[in-house]
Image (cartoon, rainbow, N blue to C red):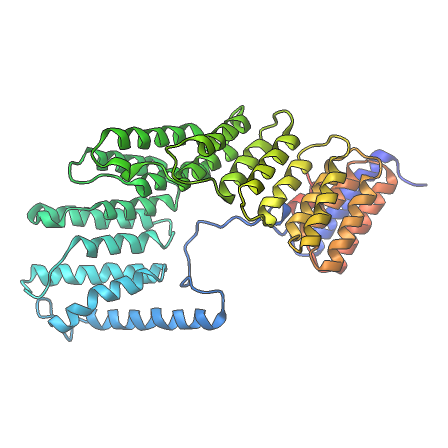
Length: 451
């Protein structure tokens, strides 16, 4: 006797859980194959994608560290007696280490700065410390992305401030503040960045520029804080109109892209409409010396898709047509936004339109795993009677192209699981077994039926 419809779903979930345990636990994965870049310490130098270049960069960093250790060896040169020929090597060495973006390199930069301070305090007339030395040290920490980097960067800034009390020429510059703000930006500390901007604005010899405000805007964008971002953009406009610095701090294209990014990531009501208004402003306002680019449209379209407002598909289609009319190069990322729009809507025919657009992308040679997974998501959301069969057909195409992954199977399994009958549960179980045969481990999303 076959199990009832209610038991079928229970059987499928139990089978999935057993499979996970058999295969060593749950593998984590982000939906639709998108991977977010973690804000974690970078263990190695960041270079080209080729192994040859990575090896060359590792050798360069190791060589720089060896040179640093030699300079720091107080047994060969006691404090106050470091030769000018050695001192002349220090700043270029600090710059080289800073580019490594590693924690070890940042520590070496810090130690080199310490040694120069020791030499100066010991009366070595060959040493001439400038705020550039401190700025590079702050920047070196900021580039690591390490969780302690902001604190270490702040410590360097405090040392600079102490030195500047006896030597006004060592006062922090705008570039110094920018490096410190970027250190905090890696960990999205918008409060500290806002405080540093306020501090800069109160000074009479430093004027924050567009790139300084953009540091804060980038954080607001990632955090989805559009109201705060709006205030910063308006503040930039007001300051540029009332200060002698003119357009030095006027919002640029990056500023507005980050503003739109904030709206697209927010949960604010009417965020789609607001994004469209900003996009229209950029296209119509004479004070803007730049035109919206691909990223501007992508952020605006994302805001519309996630807004839950009316006529999403039609509005996205209109925005993409507008982008094409301005001769913006269309690529898989921009074109896939229309797939996202179809996948977000369960209205009749949406999934069919998504698959039709996928066919167009494949003909252009720009379809990828994300494109196919988005169409699978569209079929999962569809109420069409043949949605399960159509979704499986898409997965078969993915297998032929080598695009199929855990997310693909998870979405298809969810499409079957939502039906809740015995046949669908058995088909979902078959897909789970097929995953096993391909060496793909189910993740939390698979175990929860793709919910």
